[in-house]
Length: 128
Image (tube, rainbow, N blue to C red):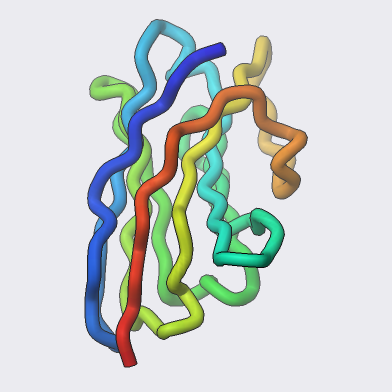
């Protein structure tokens, strides 16, 4: 298993912004679909956003559409999640996940079971 490393979490007021980053070691990043998930206390891990390995396909949960933007820099093995107009209900531990692919795959992968590699998570707290 590959260990991913998230950064960029923190405490922000409602309406504010944060940018999360996730770095993946090794050579498979450019051949991997990437995803962001989050988990609030007592709740199941939920899908936030995903991106294909080229970045041409990006998709979002309804709750984050229009406020969050996913992007990636394959030269730096890094995927980003720009979060704007944050709400208290966005408070959670945010995780990035990696799914390596042999061929280009632009399907939408929204289940945690779709991904093999995970980071340790970064806390995002939005105060009202």
